[in-house]
Image 1 (spheres, rainbow, N blue to C red):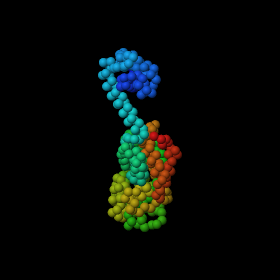
Image 2: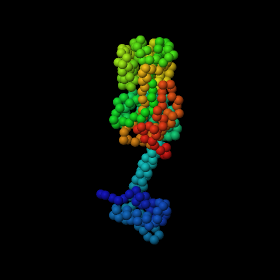
Image 3: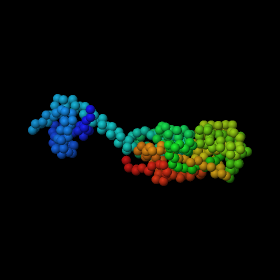
Image 4: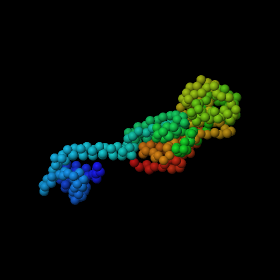
Length: 327
């Protein structure tokens, strides 16, 4: 059965029932008495019942309306709570965000941004996930995270990639490795004599893909040791007499900062770190404000050698929507 009864009708009914007066109820609702009277008449006509007994002095609920009052109050309370929850989310007063990032980006950029965001919006909870490029892209495509920060590996059509950083590759090694002794920048051909001491990364990472392309490009032998993450890479390299090829940001974060890093030239090879989102899907207000915190931190941090910031201003970032900072 169709009805024209609205929240406005219910608020008017409850106000008259609670005050026992059309005059006082109109004042409470900031309505004229004639408007309120017309609203109650519309409600009664729609439900086909008289809800108030009226005389010159009093307005009283009919027996039928007594039970209706309790239900109307409960419905209004639930409605107001529901709208309040939506407004809290809109104002980033509460909610939950899920972010995925490459390990080095998570440590250097996302964690400081999350800390700043949390200070302003303490009731918004965060889940931070690290992973390889392919895993991060998959999470964004499947809606498992609000956004990602990583290199474009599969370049999905349904994703937008807004560049943030360019990160030069180089050699990272233990201090006792021969490649650590040179104070000059290294060329890619310089690593050939030490190919048997190279430690690779898994193929589901952007770095791992580069390793395999490098071996083919420079005619190097396959490496004998492979790890799945930069954390485990540190443990292996710390054993001594080993090296790997990683981006500068990876070498300057985590435990790899205790090792020696030498940029590789001829040619210079870089990875792009991008802000990854779903096309045609706007960020939630909370996710947008976290994005703003990421961009603000990016503009303030001093990039380590070999890292170039190219997207510190949100308005200039292709594919990232500029938002108002107002709640």
